[in-house]
Length: 84
Image (cartoon, rainbow, N blue to C red; front, side, top):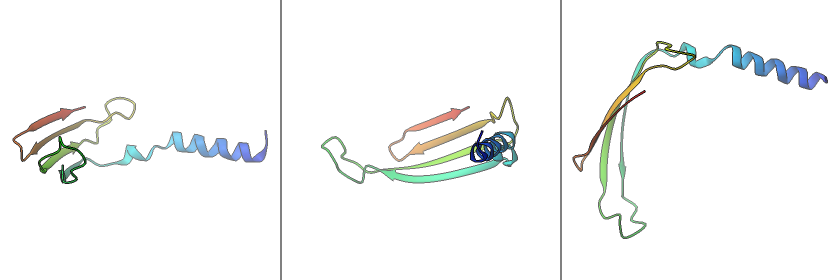
């Protein structure tokens, strides 16, 4: 095995052994945006604004999987919720 391969293998093992995501604290993420402002076809006729709030937990449920829950709303009276 060449020295370049050995170094690459060690770097890969270190990256897998110490995932940076494990140190992430719990947080709330707020987002907003707009869609439909570029009228690229006849079906897009209105501009729609949206807001989104998401909670990203810090508890490791299983092999790096962490809880997530969020809700969003648009100005067209649409709402959605998600969890994972």
